[in-house]
Length: 381
Image (cartoon, rainbow, N blue to C red; front, side):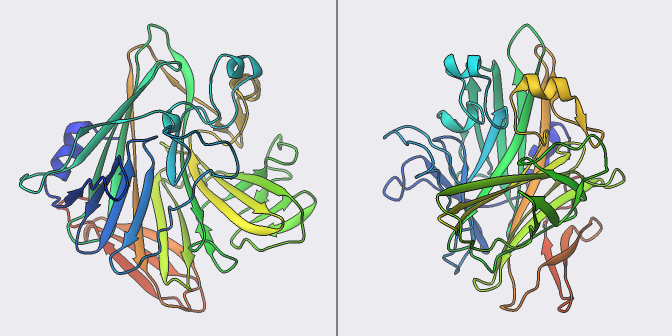
């Protein structure tokens, strides 16, 4: 998936979709539509705030930060699937005093729609960008939607505008909430070893958790499900996982059988070696889940990351040189599922057929195929 922009533009040349920028619906939201799905992104913070099937009103990406931090009128706020850049988590105390925000500037500033798709375009696509004045980085994003399938792909190119190289992190932060998220929602992945951010960071594989099991605050938890408890107040926990060293393609899915809807992501592990699962309860009730994949698995300021270096032999930060541009990509998809669907056991990229194939967990063992409708699929070898 780490290809030059020109190659992606060539693939986008075969995609036909409609852009809806109805200010009456919500200012700054651009929607891409085809026969199967609707994808909406906002220029206020750059988040993907909608991805749903036509005929199904449930939007898995309807989450917002309201209630967890103050939201100022007219200013971007964390919502849906947002991009954490140049960091994941909190800045240092000194950085915070100088205005550096939690999760970086990218989701908290206004993006520019630099190229909107048009109905009469032969080869339409969407492009948006932003500059991060404190971080000295800029990012250009392209989004394409398959002609007749509920599959989209996102290409992001980050550039260091400064005269000095620097470390940084880039984490995709899809966040789900009710009604898609409830106690029946199932999360699956091909991640392997992991640890809880609420406990000690393991020095090696000894003491590591194994997906989907994790010990969180002395309790063994199955992260596939998120159930209510008797806890009081606001409770958060984050568990971080890596993938087997031979695994080239990472994936994560969330499915709500009651809504008969599945949301999923897939990416190259060389781009994003970490999967981070965030859970949030209010007075014991399930509120939010993050299906976060990125370049780090430690939710700490840069000094802590540098001191630590690696966990499970995976890096905790990336480096970008002065003037350098680095590209990363991922695919996202929504799919209809049966009401008794039991979750995803395996995801396969069938390149000859240009399909994403989802194999159901037992006892169902059914198969769902989603076509790219492209002559050559995105590189997920």
